Every structure is written in C-alpha cells, then in structure tokens.
Image 1 (tube, rainbow, N blue to C red):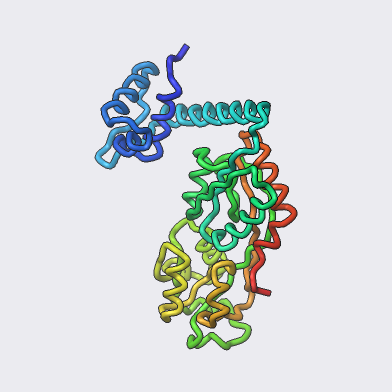
Image 2: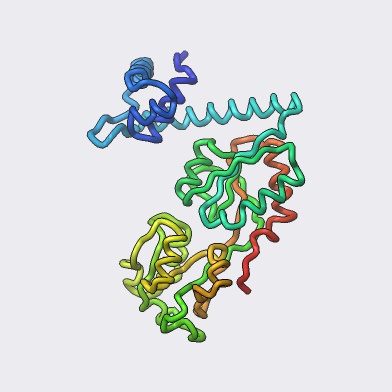
Length: 305
C-alpha cells in the first residue's frame, strides 16, 4: 500500500497551485526545505517524478497530474465527512464561504444582508475575484458556492439559475454616438474599446458579439483589469466599453455615462449559483440556494429596461 500522508497531499496541491516551493511553504506555514523534503519522499515512495523543475518554477508531470486529482478527491471526501459529522451534531448551519465574480459585488452585499437577517445562525464569508480566480477557488475547495455567469467546464458542477445579467455598451455624454439611435454592429465596431483581461466573461461576450466582423477581434483595444478603471477610462473619453449593467447604476444616476442604443443590446446572460458536484450540500448551502430561488432575481435587478 502506498504510504502517502494527508500533509504530503496538501503540499502537492499547494506547490501545483503556486509553482514555487517558497510560496507553497508560506501558505502551509512550513519552511522551504521541509516542503522540498516531503516532495522528495513522495516521489521516492511512488518511484515517479511528480514535478518538472525549471527556472520558472515547478510544473506537474503526467504522473503529478494524476496524484493531484487524487489529492483533490481525498480533500473533498474529508470535507464531506466533516459536513456529515457536523450535521449529526447539529452544527451544519455554521459557515458558508461564498465566492462572487467582480461584477456581482455590486449586489452581493445587499443579498447577503437579506439572507443573514433570515438566518442569523449562518456566518457568511465573502470572496470577490475575477472569473479565473473564482473558478480556482471553487476547484480548490476554498469556497462552498460561487455566484457567476457561464459555469466552468473543466470539472463537474451543480448549477442553479437565479437572475438575469444584462451587458450594455457605454460611452461618455459627449461621444458622437451618445444620442444616436439604432447603432449598428458595424458602426460600434469602428470604435476604440476599453476591455477586460483575457478569460473574463465580459470580454468573451464582446468577442462573440463582434465575431461576424472580419478581423475586428484581433485587436479590440486597451485592456484594463477592473470595471472601475474601465468606467473611469470611458468617462475620460478614451473609448467605449461593453460592461455589466450591475456596475454602472451610480454613473447613470449621476449622468456621467450613457448607455448606447446598439442593436442587439442589452446582451442578456444569466446569474448562477454554482457548487462542486462531488461535494455534499451542507444545510447552509441548501438554505442559501433556496433563498436565491425566492429572492435572487430581486437583488440582481438593474435600472436597465
């Protein structure tokens, strides 16, 4: 029988996540030499190399990928065991770790406050990040549920729809298209766009919208890493943007931004609550999902028609 400890599996997960021994050691409150020693012991036990050592860091081999999958499965089963035991003890309503993509932070606090008023026995912890970071947290079991748009496809998940998510084109009030009606896709495509980073849901929606125009998605425009920065850039007149309707309510009220009348917009997507399929639902997860079904659409509404 293989002699691998839970701590060693944790170390493999951490090194795979960071690709650096020192960063994995810091996360696990260990020293670098201790992490290196544990990795060598596992590799000796398995008689296989789990990581390729390069100048850029440590990267999983094919054998390492298999071991990492097992490490995640073991971690999931331990969490499931803990949840079952807590439920038997009557402690299952304790804590819910909620991940939210950055566009959801504009309504998530109000939604959380309403939920906590109904369930004061449940403590909520909120983690906000971009799409990539939110998926990583869910995959690594750092959160229980996430609120986001398009579900990930690289691991099995449960999904529950709870609201609409409109995306609109915006400009400042002096832009040539600010008061135009029925703006065509070809006309908006001639503009300089302010865009989110590669992999973001908003960017993918824009790329799909413009995909019928040859070559237009090759160089969309200036890339910025947050909706707040994009809004300020548009207000300053640096270009137009496609953005979530949840992010611009204050700017619309203050008349700092204009929603452009582009044919085919708003582009409507949906909000989902998503959890890992291989995890048992805790009572707190079930309570939150029931609340989302009843109230989620109310809190995810926007000023947009």
